[in-house]
Each structure stands twice: as C-alpha cells, then as structure tokens.
Length: 113
Length: 112
View 1 (cartoon, rainbow over the protein chains, first blue to last red):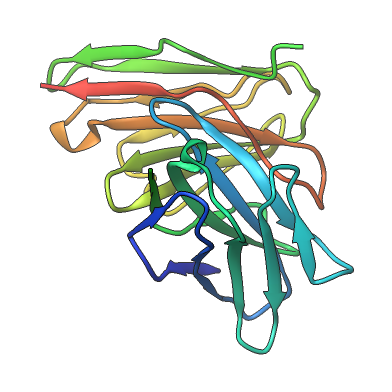
View 2: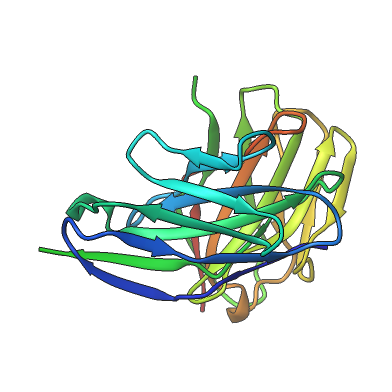
C-alpha cells in the first residue's frame, strides 16, 4: 500500500507571501498524486493532480506542484497567497494498479493580513 | 448534475444503535469509497467498491459494512455504534483510472 506524509501540520503566512506545503509519499509502484483543499465545514475539492506527463502541474487559482520521483515528493507552492487561501490542504496518493487512495494528515494554511 | 450526495448531513446516535449513511452518485462512476476524517489524522479509507457487487476493505473497516447493489448507491452501515466512531464521513466516487475522486459534502456523526 501507499502512504503519505505531510511534513507540516500548520503553516501560518502573511498575505502576499509565498508558501510551500510539503508532501512526501511512499510506494513500491508508480503512483498518481493529488492535492485537495477543504474550506471550513465543507467537503474536499480537487486542487490539482499529477497523472502522467509533465511533472509540474498547475491549478486555476495560482497553485502549482512538482512531482519529484527521486525524492518521492509532491510539494505544493504558491508565489503569493490571499486571505481566501486559508483552508486545510490534503496530499493524496494512489498506485497505478490500486483502487484506493491514501491521504496525508493535512496541513492547515492560515493567511494573515 | 448533483454529483455525490450524502444523507443525512448530521446525526446523533446512542451507543449500540445501528444506522445507515447513504451515498448516491449520478455520474455513472465505477469506483466509490467511504472515508472518515478525524482531527490530525487526515482521511482514512473505510471500504471501497470497484463496481456493482464488488467491495473491499480499506484501512479501518471494523464496525462498518457496505454493499453495492447498483452503480449509483454505496451505503455505509454502522452495526453497533461506538463513541470511537464519532467522526465526519465522506463518500467519494471516480470513473475508471486514471482519475481523481469527487467527494460528497460529508455526514457529521456523533455517538454518545
């Protein structure tokens, strides 16, 4: 089975500062990787995904993540955050031939004015 | 297009009671899963299904049953509720690989 480690449980940053949320995974097979965002009292929404091809993937609201196979990482970055980015972010992994998806414990991003 | 619909949104149970959490999707997705979310632990997989009539266990299956009689529905049954099952439950579905899951809005369950 696969597993995911999110290295920071909480990340406080000021508005317009850059941010990186770290994610490492473990797997003996090739994987698909995902970042989901959860706003307070809501379900999970897909932020971005790596399925194949280019290792740098981007979301529509300015986030990006890079799949690094040698370091087994999929860190999420944004060059300038907004107050509205305050949420919990979950990294997830699924093996090519597996039918279940495993999540990290989550990183709570708090953007301060 | 409703996506993934979960009912109820909130539920309080007494220890020992049983209940069924409903999940329905209208996207004709093959794969469906149930997760529970607890503070500091992320989401943990309870059970999943790869198609009608086929289910399998995830990380934390004890105390829960599932069935998949149709493509659309994937109910989760709590056999005898315990306080340790107090959690937020999410149902999710996806089409064949490769693809990401679409999540429902969740059911907040409290067992007293």
